[in-house]
Amino acid sequence: RQIEHVWGPPPPEPVAIVEHGMRLLASLRRGQKTGLFLDHRESRARVRALAEGARVLDLYAYVGGFSAAAGLGGAAHVDSVDIAPEAIALGEQVWRANGLPRERRSGHASDVPEFLAGARARGDSWDLIIADPPSFAPSEATKANALRSYAMLHTACLQVLARGGLLLAASCSSHVSAHELEAALAEGASRARRVLQVLERWGAPADHPRLLAFPEGDYLGVVLARSIG
Image: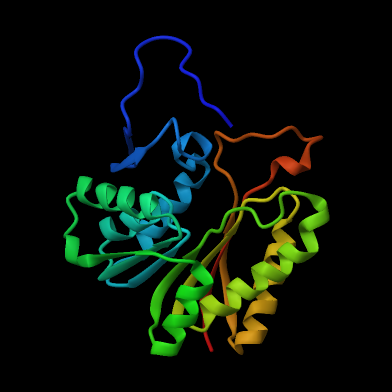
């Protein structure tokens, strides 16, 4: 797609915003969904509330909103993973913009499945994992493969989640219902031989209303689960 400047002075690149007291950076010209996934505003606030003292893994980190939220919440260390080096670099700027110590964050420009496989081989583990991938189901025809991909991702996450740890699993596809996301999470848990307890479920915040006759508008599903075995 092509972005054109229509009126007024051009915006700065990147644009700085403040969300719940957290400083974020977004590229209006090159970024996805205006450069920042605003529908995850409350999800980031939830991560901030959960991160105290935790080792946090932020998968598909993009510009590092979840990572910065975890850092501001007192995470012991945050690993940010995204296949795009420019996203990792912008995430580092966001981290510094919030006055967070550089040594408490590591950025990894890596394919997520490869990173998780390597982490498992090394015996690494985390207390809080955020798995918010890009849409695996852009159309109804791709839904079956997407559900398998979600289950595989959840399995790989649970294989490196510490006992008693938290997994925040999200789907941004209108073709995958909240029930189907939870079913994929259950399948992933079964494969990983982990017992999960669902703590919370939510979707897009109040500034993302939808028409009653358009259930596909409930495209965002988030599940927060704890490993209890």
